[in-house]
Length: 423
Image (spheres, rainbow, N blue to C red):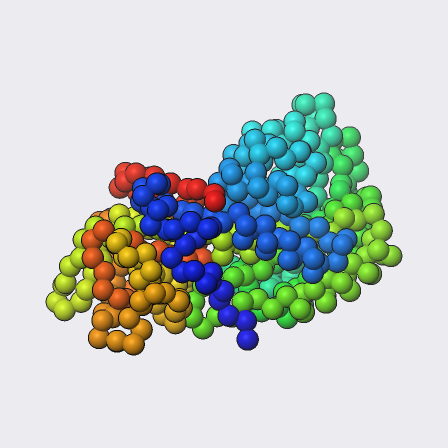
C-alpha cells in the first residue's frame, strides 16, 4: 500500500520552520521545496527507460524560480500561452525545448511562436490554416505537431482530455485525410510529430499504462499517413498525486513496464522519434504548502469557525471549486504561533509532533476553516477535527505545489496577492 508521505519533522518545510517562514514572508504564502522537486525528477528519471524524455507542463506551477529550477532538470517544457512562452524564455529554456499546446491560440501567439521557432501542437484544421498564413507572412516555415483527440480516454482521470467530443486536439479519425492534403502546407509548415494526451490526475497505474500503450499504437497507425517520419511523440502524462484520505500514491511499476515495451518497439518502428512524457502536478504538487494565518475564531449555533487571512482567492483548488464534483478536504494542519511543535493534521493525515493531543479527543473540535471573502464558497476545510486553535495560529494546507496561486482568482474582492517562495 502506497500512502501519503510527509517529512518526519512536521513543523518544518524545506529545512525551515514554518513559523519562521511566516514571520519572514508574511501570510498568506506558498512555499515550494526545491529538494523535493529535484528528488521526484531524479527518482522518476532513474526508473524510466533512457529513451523516454520528460517535459514539464508550466501551467502546473508557473512561478519563475520553479520554472528556472525545472530548466536544468527536464528535457523540455510544454506551454499553453504566450505568457508561458515568455516565462520559459526568461527562465533560460532554449526554443527547441519548448512546445505550445492549447485549443485557442491567438494569431499574435502563433506569430510569436513561429518567430521563436518553437514546436506548435496544432489543435484543428482551422489553426493549421491560420498558422500557414502567419508563417508565409513571416517568410518562415513553422514547426508543427498534431494534437490528437484519441477515441479512447484515460480511465479514472480527474480531468478527461481525450475520448468523445473534446475541445482539445483533432479527432483521430480525421487525421489521415488531413495528412493526405499536407502538400498544401509544404512551403509554410513542417510536420514533426504527434501529441496524444488522454487525461490528467490519475492514480491508477494500470489505467495509465493502458492509455500509453493505446497512444503508441495510435501513433503507429497514423505514422503510415504522415508526410515525414515522426520526430517527436508526446505520450501525455496523467500521473496523479493523492489529496484525500482514501487515496494511495501512484504505483509506477505498470507504467514503467509499459514504457519499456514502447521504447523497445519504437527503436525499431519509429527510429527517428523522440518520445517523451508531459508531466506537471506529479513533479511539483507534493512539494508545496499554502500557509495562512487565523485572524478570528467564532461559534455559530454550536459550530466552530476559524477565519483566515487567505482563501479561495489564493487556493481555489482547496476550496473544492477547481474540478471537484464532491468537495473533500485537503490534508491540513494547525501550527500554534507560540509552539511550533504542536501540529495535528486532519481527515486521517496524522503527523508526528511534540504534543498533538492525539490521546485526548476532547481537545479536538469539529471545525470549519474559511477565508476572508464574502461568499460561502470560501471554505478551506469543512467540519474537520482540529486541535485547539486561536487567532495568530497558522493554518497549513499540504499537497499545494500545483494549480495553486496561478489557478486562483487573486483579484476577487481585491485582497492582496499571495506571496510565493522557492526554498
